[in-house]
Image (cartoon, rainbow, N blue to C red; front, side, top):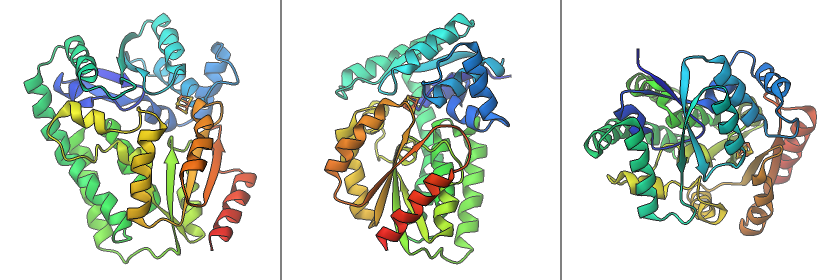
Length: 326
Ligand code: SF4
């Protein structure tokens, strides 16, 4: 049986697959659990504070619950300072922790050094990693096609666009099997009529903790045709250089670099409005003020806390936003 390696966010996953290990995106593990809220409560019972982001608490308890995850690659720069304490509490529980940092200034040499440290920790060579990149890129290309069908041909729902792109952080542990699922989704999409929605929306920020946002919007005539972070997880860049790929990847590198990508996609995809999602107790909420100043488009900021459905207040805010856009 192949060893599982937990990841706290997208990292150069080629290194894990090259080492013949199986990456597990811990965010997905937490949110796909049968009772994600029970995991959050368990973390609080263990001593995690109430006013800490739910993703962190959920990941902590998910690792404790899934005993086959004994190694964790934690992103210590470029994601979230809460990850530091998460990593320490898991270390205390006996999990092997390997840190990985994205250099804030996107320095090529520093990033290469980080990737090579990870390669040394898992015992793989550049040749193995480059071969694995080619293998994963075949699957990524299918997901790029799915994204194109979303905004160019109106054949993919906002939820499917979210789901398949976000799954590219770990390819659900089996890239070829995941590729087959993407191919089936593409075939189905090409076989059905176009999805007619009056409004085209963009979704930016960390992925939502509630799972009914996309369907709710579509029932009201608005479809998300751009998922910022999820799309970044697919590495939508034409480069054979692995280091450059993770240098172009925008999520870990600060708001101004992210905004370059967001502005380009707003124009390309002809969006009517933007939903900026911010998780409760997340430092990224502060960046909302920069985003509001920098984007010249109607914007709704949504806040989510617990892993459940949209609450009545959020539904009302979404309704009012859509009315305003019309
Ligand atoms: S939502 Fe914010 S606080 Fe929570 S894990 Fe992500 S970056 Fe950290």
